[in-house]
Image 1: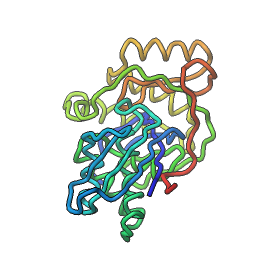
Image 2: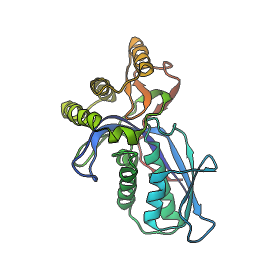
Image 3: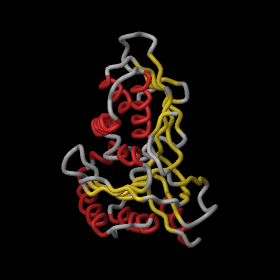
Length: 263
């Protein structure tokens, strides 16, 4: 069975009080990850994960499939760069679980699969809440309670310059203290029905306040602003996303209105 989960760009985030909560503002994008799940060659084998046909270590997917206790192989096709702030690990994990649930005739609800994917991401240190966005689609804002979804039809441009290790960022106590302070303040200041442009503008102030942007990121954001748009940095990756421009950044996608699905 095959399943798709959209990528997601986190504009602002803050640590939540418990592992089953999410605090942040993120948008699902139409570029994502496809997982093709088949039975492994050996019946009692550990899960096998491959990217582009090559077996690789992909901890959150392996952890999630192990929790389902199925001898699965997941072949992943990523439409977004991995490790660069597009929630690729969350998308891969959620898509793999949806496909495995169907492939092996399991009886997990969608909510249960999302929770398994979230726990795997947290344990692997690869994300804090991407799967909640990828499950719903649209612009999602969470304050530690029930995340709120907003329908948006905004084109998004992006450029990616390199990875930033999410595990290292989440393990940096000083950085996370700043993120907790600035991220919570930014989320509290968002209006009840925020535009993606407003979220992006506030995201850039947040990124600068926690001192994450590199020189390349700053230059790309300046180019977008010079063209009349707004841009910010994906959390966490050396990636710039922008709205309100056309042809300024090399890649163009759109908000994905729906969540992960079987293909």
